[in-house]
Structure formats: structure tokens, C-alpha cells
Length: 378
Ligand SMILES: *Cc1c(COP(=O)(O)O)cnc(C)c1O
Figure 1 (spheres, rainbow, N blue to C red):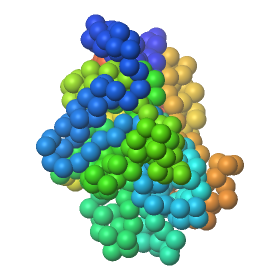
Figure 2: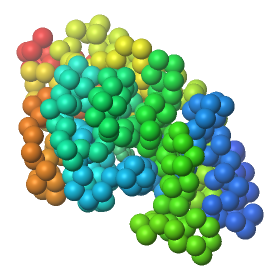
Figure 3: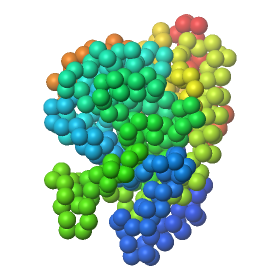
């Protein structure tokens, strides 16, 4: 039997150990730990990675949750305003909305891409709707053009939740730069992950940049000058910034390795004729596969999960409960999303990272095959 953990962050560290140690020691020796050169360097390197020398700005913050929250604040979303998003996303998407007193409104997803369905958005728009948060779930890219059309004709701000899809592209442009705001997360397990918390916001205008710079630093425009009442402490520290600058140089290689492995995984599942669905990708987009998620059919997901565990394969469920069924968000259950609900009951995230071997993938596929044959499904 093989033991296959869900994730392996240590191997990534070991691959770049020397570079990381040098970068961290450099910060420790510098005597400057918050909002210094490392943060500036990372912000400009990441901006360059995203859009080259086109106009735009990156402001590094403390987490992906804060990236969403400060974007909402900068967009002028106020308590009681409605923000449309999906129910099959990570909790923080909605935590961010609620933390500023705004109201999440849940729109169902497309049955093939599992992402917000632009055809359904309009029916949720009211006089109070201010913003739309499409989530590029599992690294797959939303149909942004359709959403931009809707946003434009209804005066809404779009904030891309790009936490799971750093490096993904839409018609050759990096996602997270397509709308007014892009909210990135550098949580350790993300495709570009820090060794602690971190996040960033991409904005197009220098006005939004200046506002977010104030918001992340107590509402100050400069030292001892409080210009915004609603400030936060949400800064990316120098150690994490230095680490992220090192890792950014490896991101393209890691992301393409992920794509190769995801393709291999899908081909193997196909070959075995397993009645398992995978997420479909929108035309003209290139995904980065943050998680490798299957949708189980005919056999209960929880049973498959248990059987895989018995075979030494660790899996997770992203996400088991539609967010409006969570006790803390239940008062926002104003819509029913049958597709998202079905996904919550049937998705299963298989082990996936850029250091997996084809042998491990074969073992996972073979284990799935024996679960299905033993259950006499195929
Ligand atoms: C990880 C994640 C976040 C939050 O990021 P943190 O850095 O952990 O605050 C938000 N949205 C989605 C979809 C995520 O996966």
C-alpha cells in the first residue's frame, strides 16, 4: 500500500531551501521588518508578472480575506449593500463580505465549470447590489467577459477572488487583472504561497491604490496622519515579502508542472472509463489547477473518501456545505442553488501538488477503479 498525503509543502521548501534562507537572513539582518524594501520589491515584481509594463498596481496585504475586504471598502461598499457571489466557495469569501456589514447574495453555478453562472446573475440584482465577487474556483477561470457586461450595465464593481488561481489566464491576460479589483491569497497551500499569511490586491487606478495603501495601514496617508476613519492593520511583513519574491520566480514552472500532472490525471481517469466528472474549463482560458477535484457519481462521495483513506490516500472536500447552510450565514439563505448543493454533496479533492509522481497518480486511479468495480458499478 502507498501512503499519499493530500499536500506536500515541505518538498517545495527543500527545492528552494538555500534561496529562502538567504532571503530571510537578509531581512533579519536589515533591521526593517514592516513596509520596507522587500514589500516594495515584491509589489513591483508581482505587478510585472501580472501585466508587464501596462498600467496597474499591486498592494500587498496580510491575507486573501483582507484583500477581499479592503477591495470592498475601496469600492465603497457599505453596510446593508448586497454583494453577489457563490455558495460553493471557501468561507473567507463570505466572511470578507459580512465583516464590513454587507450582505452576501448567493448565485448558482454552471453545472460544467462549477463557477458562477453569468446567466443567473441578473435575477439577483436589486437596488442595493454594489459588487460581484466571482471566484476562480480550484484554479479554473470564470466567464469574465459576460460578468463584465452585466456589471457595466448595472453599475457594479467586480472583485475577482483569485485566491486559488494565481497565474491563470483569460484570453492571454492574467486573471486578477481583468476587473476593477483582484484579490490574491498567499496562504501557504495556494499556488503562490508564503510561509505564513499573506495576500495582495491588484487595482487599475492610482486612486484605488492610494486608498488601499491607507486602508492597510490604520487609515493613514502618512505617518501620524489619519485620513480614513475605517483603517485596518493589514500589512505583508518583510519576511513573507522576501519569501514570495523568491517563490514568484518559480511560479510559472510550478504551474506548468501542475498542468501536466492534471492532464495526466484526467487521461488516466478517462482511460479507465470511470463514471467520474471533472471540472470543465471555459474557452480561451488557461487554468492552473489549484486543487484536483472530481465529482463522484453513483457511489456516495463519503464512501469513496473512506475507501480511499483505507488505501492510504488522503482526500479533502472543498466544500461540503453550501455557505448559506452554515449556521453563521443562514440568515442569508435567500436563494436556493441546486447545482452548488449537488456539488457540495459529490465533490472530492484528490491529493495534488507539483511534486506528485505519475506512480502516485496511477495508484489513486487504480484505487478508484477497484472501489467502483467492487461496488459493481462498472
Ligand atoms: C484561501 C482563500 C481565501 C482566503 O485567503 P486567506 O489568505 O486564507 O485569507 C479566499 N477565497 C478563496 C476562494 C480561498 O481559497
